[in-house]
Structure formats: C-alpha cells, structure tokens
Image 1 (cartoon, one colour):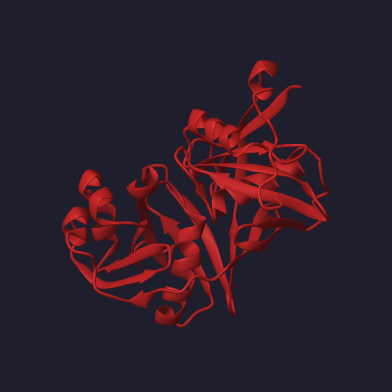
Image 2 (cartoon, rainbow, N blue to C red):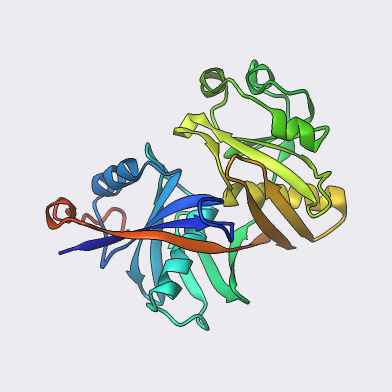
Length: 277
C-alpha cells in the first residue's frame, strides 16, 4: 500500500520558516526500525508517527538518530495534518497518547494550541566546559531531567552565540536552551536551542524548550502569558500560556508538501507491538 508522508512548517505563518516536521499517519503500530529509518531519510529534527487508538491517536517522535519522549512542533504538525486532510473536524479536540502522557490539541481561530506538561528547571552549576563550548557569558544556569537552561544578559547575546558543536556534544549530555528577555518590542523573551547530543546542532523552533521557558520566565516576568521568539536562522514564534503544571503552546502551521512512499518502501514496515504500543 502507498503511505503518505507530509512535511509541515510549524510555529510560523510563512513558508520555509519555523520548524519543519515530518508527519506520517499510519493505520496501526509500526516497526521501530522502520520509523527510525524513515526519520533518518527525512533528516528533519523530528518526524512524527501516529495511528488511531481508542478515542485518539498514539503518537511517537523520532529524530534522525533516536526516539524522543516529547516534541512540540511535530505534535502541532500532526494536528494540522489531521485537520487539513479532514480526518477530523476542526471542532474536535485531538487526544494524543505519548511517552509523556496524554497531550491534546485544539483549533484556535486559525492557530493550533497544544496542552503540554510544564517542565521545571533548578539552579545548578554548569558541567565543565559547557559555557566555553557555548561561547557565552551566562547570568544564570539551571537544569532539568532532559535539558540545561542558560540565561544571558541580552537578546544580542542570544542571537550572536556561535557554539562549538563538537565540543558541546562532548560536554552536554542533554539539549541546551539559551535565553534572555527580548529587546524587540513585539516579544517578551527570545531563545535558541542546541542539541548535538541527539544529532541536532540547532533546532529552529522548539516546543519542548518552551515547556521549560514558560515556567522559568513566568516567575521572572510575573506573567502567565508570554510571547516568545526563537532566534534561529529560520525563526519562529510561540505564544505560551501557563496553567498550574501545564503549558499551552499556540502557533501556526503550513503544509509544504505531501509525498507517497513507494509500495516497496512502505512494505519494509513490519508492524511490531512493543510494550502494548
């Protein structure tokens, strides 16, 4: 059978900006090796694979090198494709069952809002060599289970950072978020996201990062709504709303293309259920 595969630009309203995600809607569970091979072939920061399960969809995300437990932009991309292909009406909230628990997506006046867990960051000392690899002077350093967060003095410091990715991969065992208050008047904060440890030197616009940045900056700004800009080469915008231990991420998405995997390629997928997934 043919298998459709979509590429969607997320957290942007302009083509070739934001973060491109692969989206593959399956009829049922797929082989992990096959999903990893497809993600490596797509060579995007993440490719999402989903299939109907119960009253929602089982959803998994793969980088070109490995499976990850949480990905914001590919979740927004998945919801976008489901609605754009009329697989579901836009009036219906989508439930996704993932390694990070149940996530939801809603159509919101032309944008998409996803409901994600808020991820805390605690102050810590940076690993040896990390700040040197980033090439910045940090004002505050913290970490969570799956990230480091570095606050720097200014938006200029965020934009001008030129990390040594080889060194960063050696000293940082998890992704690094670099952030500051924004000097651009239309934004509250700016950030960049570096993850050579999982094969992504710099991710264009990162939903996961804003699950960390939301609670971090919410306290410092004294607000529960934050307009965030990720200052990668492609750039992108995320509107963040804090609700207790959850973070709502709102952004736009555009389908760039749809392709069909040839039958011989699709047939190399041997569905295997792992731990009930």
